[in-house]
Image (cartoon, rainbow, N blue to C red; front, side, top):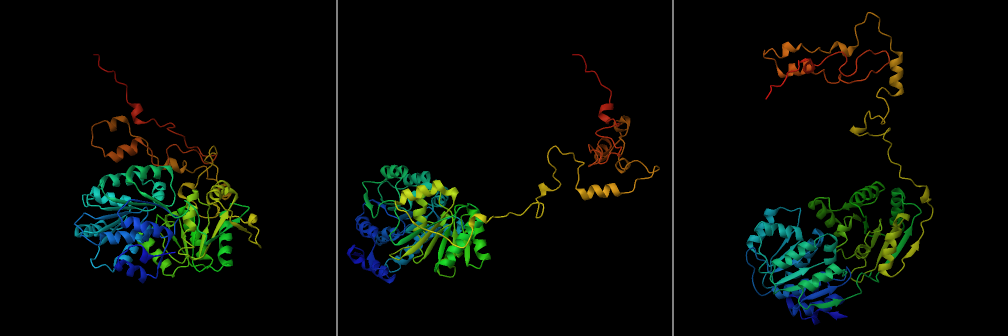
Length: 504
């Protein structure tokens, strides 16, 4: 085991680390910090939860201790794929930089926050800029930021950026920064696209592999629950049984879709569990408030999409529940990496249905081990059905009202309406014509329309065109004698005599 005091950090930084309660460095920290302090490029490959954030934050603080920032020209740049991870990096920087003699300034540039507040910080000048790619380039295109003074560039969770489609943005950021700079590049996996990026932009990097890429920590006990059905209600039932059967101090429930996150969180709250949702469709204030409550222990269960799989540095998460098997096997490693952190033990459960056959095979092949299978007793999951509300009994959309099957005559009505029509007394013989003919206005002769007299536009329309709801209606009963279409009424435009065109 390597102590932080052996890595060459300054006394002020060591004191800040000691104040957090850490004395021993993780493998990625022990190997990356001395190399970063020497000013060399680093390519770090380590599973999530191994302390990558401190591995680049601590040497960056020491290297920036000498010097001062300039307006709109940061000296160090940290790029993170999600708002949550960027916020976590900013918290780490604030925690470790507070004891420095020369106060280091920093700014967080993420979406969902006012541009003006961020621009004020940039105008004053910051040493470290922590940002997501999109918001960083937004500020650059507005002319509020220059990246020509960047001395240190950190790319965190590069494989996640690949998944989210940020690689073109990362390439542009590399080209906007000076060629002579130090680059600290971290990723949990090394797909071919990431390898190409490192060869293109890193200068003779020191490759550090703390563990085999995409492996799970030994401190996490993994379980699989197989269900005979893919019904959502059966999965929610199994999830509640797993939470109730174990001593869950706090836990994260991962779903593949944002809509499913809301449904699962609502289901847990309905059954008495303390749960809340977090995903990309929520506004930034709600997301930050929910995460803060979870960190403080005020919230027991956090239902999340994969946006929260990276960067959630909650040291003591006891359980992770995979409500859905992830589509990408790498996401499984990052999901369960939220527990079993910093040497603590944790448990990870995964609910598997027949629809997950391909995804579960990919996960098992990647992690290289078979999780322990457990069986939930006392419930016939095959008989559980998620009965959706019948449209005829519940709410109906506007477009569903009075909708008839295609091909069915419009005269078909519900039974009650037909009976009411059949029981209505017949009209006497002396009754006037059907009601729709009473209000129908005959078109005026063409001479009146074309006589040159001033006639209102609405009157012309009403004379030529029958009232709304009358034109083209079919008889509702066999006894109805109303006409269909134009009937015996000749439109005025058809009554005009044909005129011969002048000969050329």
